Length: 259
Image (tube, rainbow, N blue to C red; front, side, top):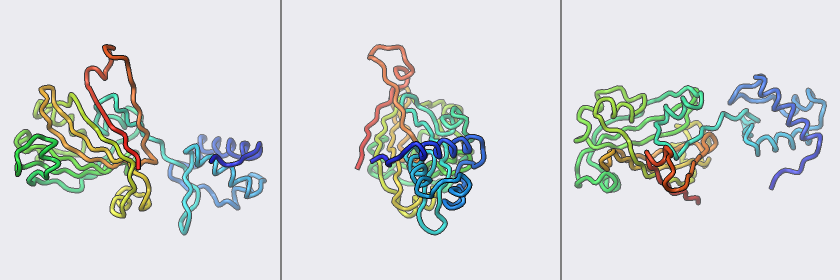
């Protein structure tokens, strides 16, 4: 239920938001204590709490309980547009956000059953396994696991893998994404996920399982991404069948599942 508010709480919210917009506090920075903020603004702590609750509901701040907690300025949300096939660096750059990558591991291994099915491989065929953390303005935004057929991309691990994987495959192997199928679930983070992504255990994540195909229909990527739900927003553009849209040129289907 939305918090019960009044004109004073609305006024406090507007004042705090104005100060955030003016750069007094940066994304991820802790606002002052409730006591100091209330004294500065000349209001009661109960009215301040109402205003902060409104701001949290609007996504402007994030409130953390416990030692080291407080009220923090929220980071900008990332629009994950399912109407276009884009790498994470491309979608971040398009939104004025600096993209970064940390590579956790790379290697080759026999494809697991789910990957063999997704990539239409015979049992035991080798795939590359690439695990990366994607960063948005220096902060973790997603944890990526990608599997690609070794036979399609000989020597792939000799390349720099910190940028767009799609761009690299197109440039060096002449294989580009033409169609993807994505299945999206809302899950709770494990302790390991939370540690890697800088969140609390049990915080929500968008779990995205993807199969990507080239122009001739060959599946060449099976991946599983975990996006921070507090930083990610799903966007879908639709058009009537037969319309001349980007979605007609690069088809993308998805399922959204919530628990």
